[in-house]
Image 1 (cartoon, protein in one colour):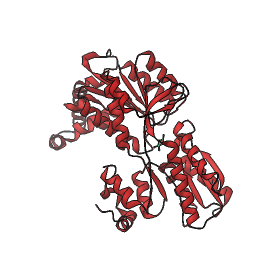
Image 2 (cartoon, helix red, strand yellow; image 1 turned 90 degrees about the vertical axis):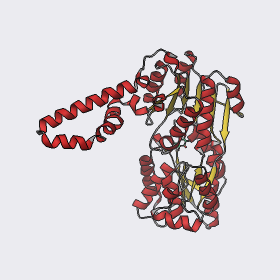
Image 3 (cartoon, rainbow, N blue to C red; image 1 turned 30 degrees about the horizontal axis):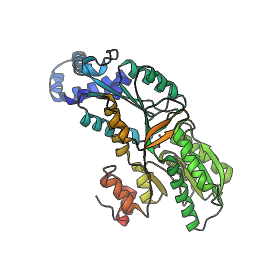
Image 4 (tube, rainbow, N blue to C red; image 1 turned 60 degrees about the vertical axis):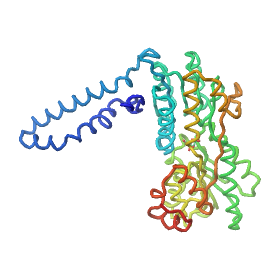
Length: 413
Ligand code: BGC
């Protein structure tokens, strides 16, 4: 089966889940009818025993079928497999599992049928990511695509990879002070500028003056620093006062909600006119805090990622803006780079990189993509583009409270 080539993350990460989630359930439910019939004729204990035998048999079959994905100590190159590691940072932000991973996997599969992907997600834990990186290197990864939880400490991962001759592609977040092969991301200072400029323009248009609350991303993420820098370049000279400012550990929406609750307590329910939130998860946390305190109407809130829930909030009027970063070219160009590198085509890989980005140690050949601001006013074009790009589906967006907004913007499924 073609899918053997792709290593499914959870299979490697947490073997018990592999058995209970993907393995046993699938194999167990299919013959459910016949089991039901036998089961009705047998006493409970015998039924349980039968079930256990079935579970063991399915597990053994799966182990055999997927053996290529589980040989963690296979010498590199064993069986001719070209192994590419994809290490992503977290799951609370929906992009990683909904966009980055499947788009990357599909493109690698199309470009290189005999490549294997070793996928891991660190759930925002940098120590865990270090272990995952060690594991994929031991498992014979020839190229590592790394979106670091911690841009600074990931330098030690890059050093280990380099010692094994494994090139590292710094995916979306820059790995600092390390000898990495490529960096691919968006213009992240521009993301911050778009967020802040949209907020300032809206507040000025509405005749508002006064304070705003700033909810930034994770202090270990170099991108968060760049978003903040871009935002400050607009906000600091805007005439609005940044009355409260937070860095949000792990980009956690829950922590953003707590930060916003603290800001409301300190400033009062009417003590601010807008909220700069660095992404849709933290923006959602801020909105939840304001709703929880009964603040209406909710002042303009920014975001980023064009997550389904955020696009719906924009169409229903709860969130003011988001930033659409088309993940497809980011993931697919990375797949192209990784496949070129695994095949030793450095010339082709080099021709993809159109810029350089200094990471403190070197000018890293880079691919830098362009972000797009999204508001309700521009939804016809911007949300329309997400739909035509295949990023989101109109049928998913235009439900519940977002349906009327879709209709008003001329978006239909
Ligand atoms: C990414 C954002 C994402 C955030 C939280 C940043 O590095 O660029 O798209 O929302 O991390 O995962």
